[in-house]
Length: 406
View: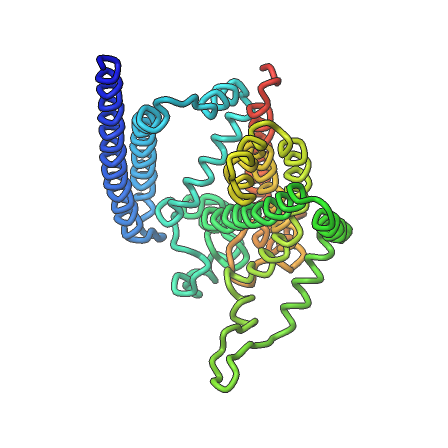
């Protein structure tokens, strides 16, 4: 009888602890959401500040300082929030990500790559604040009279990195161009990773004719000359215009001209790269799942009645995420370089758009003249970004492998 009473008390204590933990989670979520909303409001207020121009360049240092204070405040908030998050949500668990982070920090090259990427992300997010001139890609911000007086102007006090052949400030072009490069690289790699994970999981888990069919498709994709196929696809579809309408209504549900003009003409490149970049993730996921699916924890999940979808999503894929993260990080650098190459060949961003590759394309005629800065500065931006992503990818590969000793 006394033992039964003791068990009931222990159960009541356990339920009370769980209720209190649930209340802590709710409080943390509400406070975290409120503070994030406050940072979002502050960001919108920064963005609404008056656009800089040739007459008020003196306000640029103050805006850079405001961005630095914003980033430092947000970093401190995330650091404090992570401690509470770790205490509340991982109270009875071992956080393996923290061990990975400790191994990652020992790699100086990887830390430098992470710093470069964080800097690029901050520049892209706060482009409207950090740019000395308004968005060069918007026609409302383009003054033809002012531009004609400053065509291909070398670096000066008014234009720190000079102006391009259209009279636009080169520093503003590079700052706003970082948005296109980072967004394109991240979106292409995430889309390609989702395709590769889906196909690789299905092929490895079910095997048989499904595995053979997907392997054939993967071999066909890998057989295409990558850059040549993208050039052909982009050049063909830019000349083909068609619409899809609902019968008997005339309502247009797809217009190729409008679709392919999205994202300054880079939507076609996004589709082409996403359709061709998934094979690497597919091979890695398939090989890892073939070795994981026969392990004891998968057999245990199958024994308790878990269906195939739950086994794949909850038990198998989390154990193959580390190589996927490394591939995505390294792949972003490849996408940025491919976009630059396509833009240099004239198949990238449309006329008037701002991207690093487009800037090199427009300044290629001056590469061997005194105006080589038109090519030099965009090239340096591409090199630095690729160096950052490659260093980060190598560091993540070593950090996820506990056998690597640093």
